[in-house]
Image 1 (cartoon, one colour):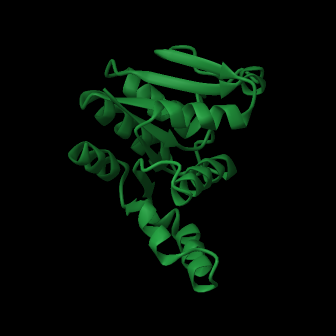
Image 2 (cartoon, rainbow, N blue to C red):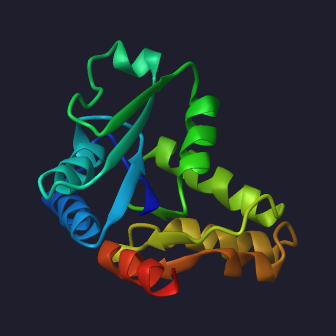
Length: 180
């Protein structure tokens, strides 16, 4: 079984489309024997993608710092839940357990995870696929910023080829399955 790491928000966002798409992604992953690696929360988009996998009897691995468990937002029904000491340890464990990475809507934590895994690819620490789901233009500004970094000479143009931009979460999961 391959594991897809999903970076996403612990908030639900202002539109229910984010939660609905996350749950649909989770269902699809389970139906296609893709395990989920994610941040371990029971709330928001994170909770929805995990619940989507679980309702189809799929495998879910959560990785969550103790400080977030203390806020009582850790998901209690996962296949495996790793409680770690720090966000740094969380990101390393997510990387270690994953075969590819997918960013769907979220906030600063999502951006942190995505940018770190993108940096690791840029530095050739890994060659695992990275997907950015830009549904409804959610990541338009980030993608424009990456282009601006290229224009200003801070990122090499070929580094923008280290990730794939897709329109829908299912597009990323399907592409990963076809390439695996």
